[in-house]
Amino acid sequence: MADPSVILRCVVSVKDVRVLGYFRDGPVQAIVIEQSLSGVVCPACGGPARVKDRPRVMLVDLPVYGRPMRLVWRKHRFTCPDLSCEQMSWTSTDRRIASSRCRMTTRAGKWATEQVGKGRTVSEVARELGCDWHTVNDTVMFYGSALLEADRKRVNVTGAVGLDETSFVRLAHRRTQYVTTVCDVEHHQIIDIVPSRTYVDVATYLHAQPQAWKDHIRYATLDMSPTYRAVYTVVLPKATQIADHFHVIMLANRALDEVRRRVQQETLSHRGRKHDPLYQIRKTLTRAQETLNQDTSERLAHLLALGDPNGEVAIAYRIKEQLRVFYRLNNSDQAYRELDTLIDTCQARPMPPEIKRLGRTLNQWRSQIMAYHKAHLTNSITETMNNLIKRTKRIGYGFTNFTNYRIRVLLYAGKPNWRILNTIYP
Image (cartoon, rainbow, N blue to C red):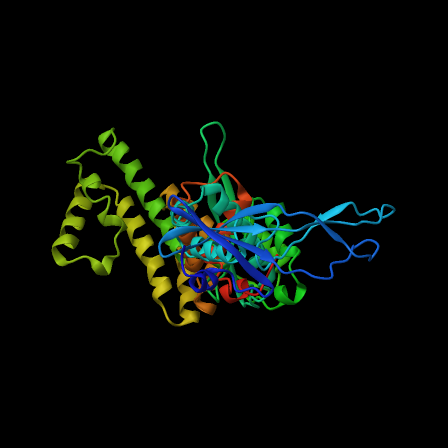
């Protein structure tokens, strides 16, 4: 038998708990404990209670010296000797040792929650504790939800928020389900996950937030989604909406590629092939002009001359580069004039139809695009948070339960105060 002093140090440091024994069963070792109770009264009538029996509950505890540990809690089941009392029997509980809804000790449950919340897999933690996957996952959900609820300062008063969609689950027998990430752009953390991307659900969530929190928001970033623009317009009318510059440039690149494909079909009557001039420069056209060396620039001009007889692809390329110039300008007044000129150029009569469509889109989002030069904020922080969400999904090999998904994401990317976890006993 191990040294009793060593065993005692391994037990949860809780007052009025004594060690009754220690045993080993193969690789698993266990400590038997019991509460020291006196003067227990009936919660119904207030009279003295007597012990009915002492059931034993085995709990998963933190490993000791690299071996799994179990804590056998010898509980007390009481009964009221007064036959007229409505209270038949009850069992003693102590949330400092373990919660009644967990099969792990409190300290093991909090440790497992922090380990999983910081990026370890549930399976890895379960192997270390010597228990099954469901025991760890259920405990993480229990303590994780309690931590998120208790950490009231996690959602800081912020001046900038962002909305973006991400796929939640994709199964063969149903369509992909999307959720909305609500991000604190100022403090770089996820505020919450809304189980939908529809206007009603997202607007309802933001509308339910405290009015003081909403009044403090000055900027709202988005990725050119009409749904999120409508949400901001109705729920946060005072916030300045900012369209993400990456998505604006991507829109111009998409229009350029559509022009290239159409010209390819009109000139050669087939899709791009390996030795076709326009097909050879399909990737070069998407690169920034200032990053091209002299040889690449000369090759681009030569192949455009061969495959673009009417200069439509070249026009689309210059439009895309001019849009990039707009984002590089430091003077906001000059940037506004540049964008107005660009929109007018895109909507000119001789322009290709794809460029005219781009011009109409830029005109519809004109105020949101120009707002970039007011705050120089983008939706990149929200996109970064989506990468953390995807990492959580990869660690968990996908999720089908939204509640589990939301808690795991907020523990990993919501920046909870882990010190609070040591102070709560749900």
